[in-house]
Image (cartoon, rainbow, N blue to C red):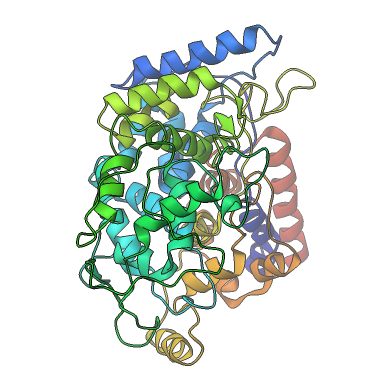
Length: 505
């Protein structure tokens, strides 16, 4: 048998299989409960109540293989190993899905995946901050997600940070955005679920928010500065605010207004004191009508590729979807003390999350009362890390690392292979998470780049002399698709191997 022919023939399977999640298969039994099981049942009851009046038939539950791959990617950004997949599929434990969810939430990879997701959302890259390192911010976020720091406390610490990136990685957020309008846009969109930027320059006759609302909120950031230094020149810092500090620059469209909470009262603030702590206290208060609701809806969208209501970041604009479900989950998330792992555990234990991604009743789309799970292409981070698992790459050689560092110093490009890969495969914020957002250059990169053609630990393992061809095929499928091949797939692959053997003799 020609090993070279086998590697070339199977490489397409290994790479292209990782572009999307596994397809649907036979239904399985519901999992047993966890500490979030009661809330998961309530999720399903509310969705069923809404669905029954619309004559929508849901898809069956996903089989164990589809669920396993989905949970690993959604919770930790990785595919499971071949051994993990084999053991999970062989297990007869009726509680294995709930246990898997708990195990993934407790994994250090959970915090890393959440940190990279939120770093991408919070940092808007442009020509002014392209040199700014994001690693301190990712590390700061990762630690807090893994510790399951309450969401209101995490946001409070982020909004009130001072000092340099060395003092706190959270300072990266303010150093990257720098101006009150940019900060206001991101804070309102991500933490309040309100797109306020449309009111920056004019009053729209049909929009609920006006220019005065925009600039009254932006005024909370009017005294914060990133040290007055250009990013990349020295070490910028978020300075302590006082009445003596020079106010941050504002665009020509700005209104000179006093700080005022969105849709609420104007606080009594001293000109000699910082404004951000007052904003953070109001925003993260359990009585805030925006804060918990925005996080619940965005978290749901992270797992379902769409919010409970849409648009996901503009909940004030006549939202469509399941408002009763959003209301109840918001209440429970608040009661839990803004416990994000509890919320995610409830979502993942629901039948809604565990439904197959194949077609539901004819004519139904995944948007119709969550009748089936949408298929999501892998993010750049998921794709790179999963390929690293399959290909067995252990990182750059010292020579490659030195070369990358030199390029970084000259061109300010991402310095690691992983960072370069993510930048090349990146898609714009707001892109449809169910669409493959890149194109031919990225496909050619997967096919032809040296990193993708260095051989594979997986192939070495699968083609070990102790394994039969059938066992080798099983191993390849478990490692790449987290399942065993179908009868038709097995026949096709074994025929390919047989033809390769004949050609090489």
